[in-house]
Image (tube, rainbow, N blue to C red; front, side, top):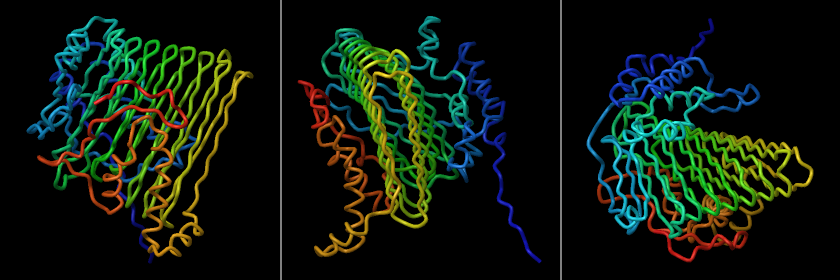
Length: 468
């Protein structure tokens, strides 16, 4: 007689209860508008699928996600923190809450960081602008992240502050069943220059059950502003992560989104950029390294609204063992977006029979006077390249590793940060060797001082001042 083994299906109502939602709302003193938004998002979480588009549900790699027992109100000791980089804004999210340090010279120039509690007391217009990224989530995990919002801030850089500003945003998951959901709003004034790093790690030791990291980032760039936003995602394999990143680019702005996926169990990333100002330029650069049972689900939405806008999206992933990757990109060019130039590139390399990746590029062109192209591929490592390196005395595993690292470097070399490939290599090497990137006292894998510079493809990125 045959026996059928039925896998346990997680009961989503056990992940988060109504009492926990109400308790979190009360503990954070939610204003009435967000209290209702939080509750609506909780109800959406119970009803929505992981993937709202039925065309892509077969590609959503979110099996074995079970966040039962997560506690958005759990508190613990603050993690050890590195000293802030000279002249930089440092913001740390951990079990103790959110801690922000703004140098006096920036405060004197009008730069300010307002905490979640301070934003609750802001004017209705400011609060509405702060919360716009939380409106009507369309999938289960995004709705959960809104319902669990328990960290947040608004960074404001006034017009005319043209000296480069470095912002280091650090998140450390350090206790079992932790849920950190960060809502950040960044407003870059005219002619401002920002280098923003969002860095996510886990503390040492094994966590009981899965943990949640949710990140909602809303960028608003005024005329002639420049911003580089780099995310280094390197938590342990207990972390389920949800990223929602939105940006609106004004006239003649320059924005570079960057994402380096190194850790985590399941990672969902949604990136949406609207080029609404004439002459705006956006680069979206992403790299993923998948091993063991990791999976990444990335979606890029770039909408050209104004004339003479330029955009490029380049994604590359390397996957081995049983890891999974899915990358879909959408470039939409509106009716009035004349003289648009846009490029979409999605490629993946598979290093084992068990690995899988799907790449789905989409162009929607509603204007004739434009140039838009795309390229995509999923393939195993080239055996001829492996053979060539072996003929030079390298072992097969070393040859495959070198080819894979070079494959990801194609994207890093186009990033407007000087030496980013060398800076990221130790973390990539640790993950390639099967080690987690742990955060502990005296050993901080956070990024060092960085410098924005030009690349061969984009020489105008170079700033005159070092951004620390």
